[in-house]
Length: 371
Image (cartoon, rainbow, N blue to C red; front, top):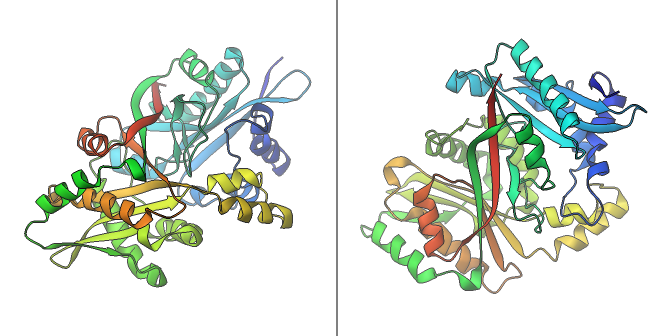
């Protein structure tokens, strides 16, 4: 008696957005979205994603009409423009522990993607690789940091029972600033910059629009060869930057220059998920107060973006970023940093981070199957 319905009105969308509350208890590590923003994000009339791409949202209901699962089928046109590989995506997957429910949801998503002329289904991504991506498969004790995901352990079985298999793993590494081997990082930075032409400066947050041009250019070029990478547009980068601007730390928003030319960027942010969880994703007067109080107790920094242009990757720039960030934050309330996420196959970065003291703490998996 299971029914799969396509979201077509605001009441259905509200059920889709709020469904995770049935899966996650109050003491779960899961962090809710900011509910008002999530409603807008998934609204076809208002969500920025729908300005350039398409998606269908599906909700599973049981015999009495209660929601028991959800999924989105996603046609990300920019991915198709870059790769031309016929890959569509699934995302926003949440489900009770029932393989038959999950199977029906994946079947609905696959049917929609086939109708779009696509050949493979990959995910979870919500909506794109530049947003939340991956299914957590290791370390379910720690809460997710800013812009990363958390899910129950049984989700792995649900996804794999629907015929999806690993295509890539994404890793997080974490280290306490007091445990970082700064001498190792500084030695790499000195060796790479021995000609004195590499300098590191703070981004000018008062002139964010000007600095955005540098961030967009380097992000697009530095990640162009990474698996699945799709560049941000300038407007998308600017929107994200202004949303996060209240939380940006000048000492953690860095630009590397070689002979006066910008060649690398580094952005690390306080883990504001701690405060979002404290207010339950609600920003009324009481929620805002809870958010502000919890924000004072954040002790983790998430390294979100580190990118260096290919021709400058042997100049110790990424090591210089790490050493400078750690030095700036020593003695502050920030005690730890999580570097996430990184491709499992990015051995060069993993080697540097491991040698500096950062251990693998989380693993997310991206799945794929033929349609």
